[in-house]
Image 1: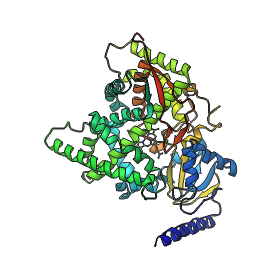
Image 2: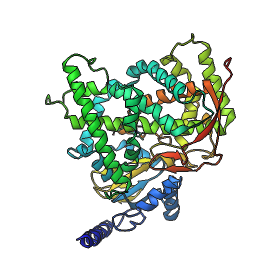
Image 3: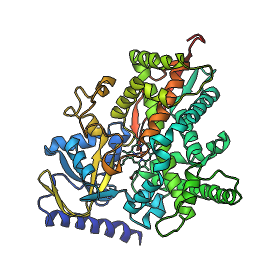
Image 4: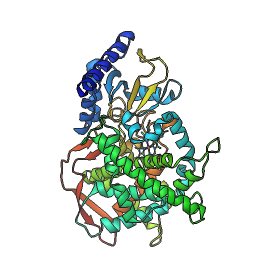
Length: 473
Ligand code: HEM
């Protein structure tokens, strides 16, 4: 039986993928690789070696084209590279393409298979605005500052050495738990945080559900988290019914109290999946950015000094113990340019998929309906046509008008652009403020390797030596 499954399905897919080549002679150049897995191993392993853009650059060079075909994560896919490709995909959302996530995502978030991902995203976008609009976020600055201070006092103060990535995750996860679920008991936050690491690796993995695979660990983690979230949701329902929870105070209450066009409330499992998506989006990405900020500031002391200067100017005008506010965030211009340069060189999301909803042509090639398309932040950001001397860390690129349209795309673009951008900006800047105010630091592993799985991280999670400032700074 196993033999039949392992031999006949790949054969069928192989024949089908080659059939589509034959029926569409003008497909982009490229090769489809092995049956089922296609070129997924090369795609994933380029990331794990720390150079996700290499998969793309090798093929651009080989086929001398800004667009090529491949088969990744079980799907015939056209990869578009550079600003023109990004513009095309971002401006044709729901006209020629629609958002698509790999099978692994649908298995990890099963409720999203009940309706199309387009429908799910529409629902999500309806729910998010009140909470993630800059105007509404302003009231979170003080809360983020309080959490940053508590986190640094508990986990960094008094230490000579710390490992940055797990601590950055603790900080961003704590904020996400507070904003979305009103949970801020550190023990409860820590219990929820643990399985999220397996979840992120499982999302962008080869969808083979066997013990020991990333995909299998991701599914198990998602089941555990969903169960936890459903019990939190049930408790909140009881609290709301007994008026013990503030109405629409956080994302969870907002979801429980909002009905769709037919007056239906969302199901508990759907709410759990949405909250899980926000907890992933809301902490893994920003914690990776914070970790790379710490890395680059250790490597580039002159940039650290400029950030420190800007942040101490803000401190100068504050009363003792006064929390940061929205105006302070607006003053952190240089610090945000540094964060943007980190987002350029180490974008947490390497890119994302779309699906062709009809046949169309791009760059003179035929893209058949149903094919997947992939746009890539990492390869655009290191493309010398988009950024002069792309390997150089230079925050001044973001001064004035900044990079050309569609070249700097860490948050995507068009209608699917990340709705959490402003939230991420705030929690990153609040952290930078509190960190440089207290410490300078050195890397303990000078040439620590970077891996991308699926988010870029230093292979040993960035251990550093901390130096506490004298109290009079
Ligand atoms: C530095 C941090 C972040 C980065 C780099 C980032 C990046 C991205 C990118 C590139 C996309 C678009 C994917 C596509 O084109 O299909 C996206 C979508 C999304 N992000 Fe973020 N994100 C970050 C933080 C956040 C945060 C903090 C939240 C939530 C609070 C969030 C929630 C979402 C959601 C819900 C979507 C899906 C939007 C849709 O499908 O319409 N993200 N993010």
